[in-house]
Image (tube, rainbow, N blue to C red; front, side):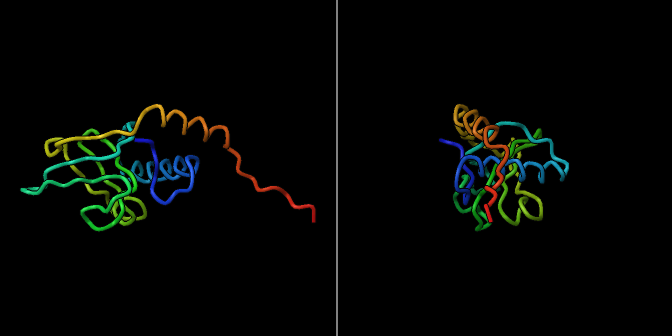
Length: 126
């Protein structure tokens, strides 16, 4: 699966949003890893939960990012980790499966971001 962040218009914007969300999660004290995660399936009691980037989360909001930490996976939606609140956590012991974004797409996205590091609108001649 090619890397994306829901509601972004291109890979450059997706990369910027991803890094801003990552900064927010790190500010909460989590030590997130570099893997780009597309989907986690885990057990929540007797229920099997699938959290997928771009799909509705178990909490009803769209999943924007999923991060990996030393204790498990953190599912981020608008009000759970992105803007306020804590992300939803799935501990390693609860995980059934994990799907990752393709690494080649991530490298391309980072490369494109570096090429477009300065987004300055043209100065008008007025």
